[in-house]
Image (cartoon, rainbow, N blue to C red):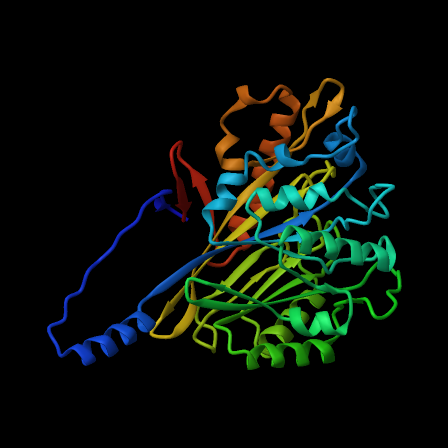
Length: 391
């Protein structure tokens, strides 16, 4: 990592015109073929654990009307989310209805999902160890809320028919098609009764799912998986084993959540498929009330996919570090997700010096970990006007 280069400036655009002096019919065929073979690109964002601890619920409540709003939580990170073509996040706070509650059995207000959509999150995965905290009714209500808000989702399903329709979830953007699958290692010992389904890590099932995904002929297959050991910054042998299994059966990107801390990111450019393969072992916490060292932030993975001559491949892999700022205002804890690079040199922004030092500690810890262990994955750095890629 030695230099900085500009990766994007919002609002840039270009166009070209081609004139071909050939017979009309041939021109039409040529234009259609050229359009189908033209280079196409999309940027994907992968976002970690969206939690719902009690302090987050209390912070979002209007004490007079007893309604809820989480919009300010995402206000500082919203521009980075909206810049991408597609943003996918792990919703680890089931929308189980009242009474709302935090750990150990989560149930957050529906307004949390509405704020995710307003912030620019396009898709949510819902299979994690807290999916069944409010049993089948909580799963069903979560799905109902996401459907009512128009947020596509996968990982948990009302019945087998819905699973067949949404597993994999097909995503199409800019002429590129992706298949998204989502699984969890378990549901904290809570059984889920049929017809409701939570996708769990069962190799025989996943093997069939990946085969079915390949039959749909997507450009790339993504597996967003809830795995690993909580609070361990080193991936477990089981994560490596499971990751290899997923790639052997057709996955191109494996995105991990659950440990609540960051783990390394690997982009293998010269994988046997020619498309490359990519593993993010753990994105850490996107938003939560966990404040212990390493748990108070996370990363957003930013992946570029390019399609040339009908074939798609991974062409860039970067990340933003994010941190959860929790100032006390009028005796109430507030929650704000900050893109670290935009605030790491703005001590005056913070009303609490101790919290600024906590953020700096998180940044330093994360860079020591990721700069040493990442492969072909670089941090996005803000220079005051645009984001740059740090090599």
